[in-house]
Amino acid sequence: MSGDAAAHVVEDFFGVVRLFSDGSVVRGDQSVLMPAETVPVPDVPGVERKDVVYDAARGLKVRVYRPPAAAIAAEGGDKGNNKLPVLVYFHGGGYCIGTYNQPGLPDLFRQRLAAELPAVVLSVQYRLAPEHRLPAAIDDGATFLSWLGTQAGLGENSEPWLAESADFSRTFVSGVSAGANLAHHVVVRAASGQIELGPVRVVGYVLFSAFFGGVERVATETDPPAGVSLAVEMSDQLWRMALPVGATRDHPLANPFGPDSPDLGPLPLPPVLVVAPELDVLNGHVMRYATRLKEMGKEVELVEFEGEQHGFSGSEAKRTRN
Image (cartoon, rainbow, N blue to C red; front, side, top):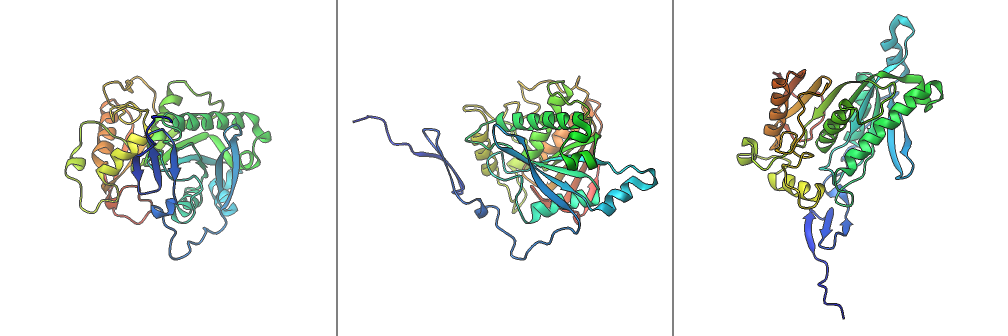
């Protein structure tokens, strides 16, 4: 008889993700954390969407959102240019949950981005932790940008919707929560020449409620706002499951300004829009990110949404600009 002890649970994230001592993972129904809306969410009229495989070896897909023809025509004006900016979008979920094609309000948000910007919106699937710990998700994001560069180089032979509607010279990278963290790291890789972009030009990036961390607590962690949707304990647990085994929150993938993090100063980072909800335990990390980049001379716009929680999305909140 073996003397090995039976595997036991070492992390249990609301029953949705359970990590065992032998490294195995059991997943539950994530609708516990992401319940469906009680009232059906209508689609934005005229927005089209479809899934395209970008990494056949891993079965990873991207959902392409294309705005109504009228929006494309209006963007082109009388110049006959029907090509739209490209918005790459990475979903949130602490690197451990979430999907690129989540229905309901997340899908509606991406539809609205496509229709109201207007833009071709690309919602990217990536591998999740703890089955695939970081940097797996960031590697997938880099693979996607490389795939996009290949598509851009194919011209009229690329994926039809991209060939018809995408202006690859106006590509923006964005994400919410962990997706914002991912967007940061992908942009850094692109700026440092680690990704073959071809004709793609990343001209800006947008971080919604970025999921950053650090061993040293920020004020919004030590004295969190009342009723926050993301508690400090939840954030810590997600980092324990997402980071390489044994890593702390000062790992460069969690803390872009940690003791071992690369110097961002010399990199030609594009302009960034940093969106910070006021009632977020990570607000201090997000504010520090914007402040540090400004101190480096980077072009930063910071928008704080008053009264909003971590991971919110929408356009009705009152905002203050800095």
